[in-house]
Length: 136
Length: 122
Image 1 (spheres, one colour):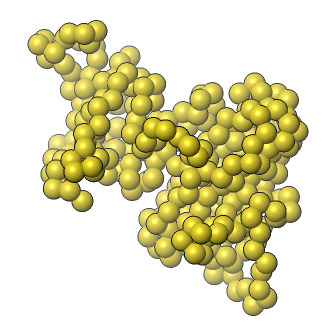
Image 2 (image 1 turned 120 degrees about the vertical axis):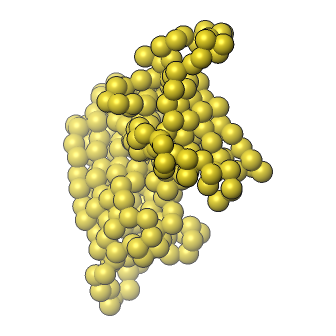
């Protein structure tokens, strides 16, 4: 593939509620697998924080959820691995920020990745959401 | 790639040392690194003006490694400053020592970022 390596999909200090897509990591043509780690460094307050890992198959026109990692009011890290080689004979209905908590859609990897961060409640005390992707 | 950046890359490949440029989140909880080749030197006596100390260093890097790793990664929309350019209070690790970036001077040729000079302290 082009440009395997470790990428930062997000490093975001969270305060008020947000629904915000981060800028994408591009030039990942030929990506066959990605391991994603999302981490919530919890400070205080807040209600929920979800990280949607998304890819695009139309050069960023639309984005498709491939993983949703959900957090609440405790620090945690969650890791998933996705393969772009998993057969997908049944059509998948694309979602954008609507995948169920802590689920993945395997087999769909385009040429770019991004993280969409959706939080509710007001976090404080240096709460940070970090998302890393090891792409190969 | 511009010839200016290519020339700098060749020179760095021959004589540069490896450093790490580190961007922290605003709360200093997490960071993301990029490994770069760099020229690191002290300031000459004639350059010790305007608050520049003899313990400061001038670090020159090429943006090539930054472009390749897409450092510092995904950013919130609406960021007004080009996030790829190191900024004040980013860190550099030189010979194992963590130092603070005090100021940065990006150089553009024909609108392309070709060289980054930084004053580091600490």
